[in-house]
Length: 173
Image (tube, rainbow, N blue to C red; front, side, top):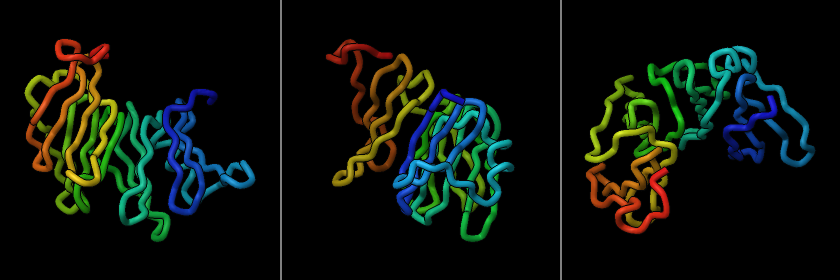
């Protein structure tokens, strides 16, 4: 597909490309050649519309999209784990083994040790979260939403500030 939805350089220097309809592709950065990886076809079937690609602190590759479950691929063990989180737009490892996921449920927290997902309620957040960023020093988390502006959360995931059109953001979209 010519529609690229996400890009991620991995720890080995390869570029992962999330496509619309064809799933994730892996490109060798030095040669620009497509690399085939173990279990490639199965992963592409499970995550055809790959809106986000993420590499966690253990080196696992995560693939999420608007259709299907969230996929975790452990290349060392060659295992694929599916998690019941749909409509994934972005994700971030909040703590070891705990992920924040922007999806059609707004914001979810996934604990992979218990395989439990919790939808988080953030006052004023009424739409899809499209991006998540964490400041390294303060551990403050910023959420970018569709239509509600920016949300600043403290390290305990409590709302500390909203930035939108009413207080200076050019657009809420």
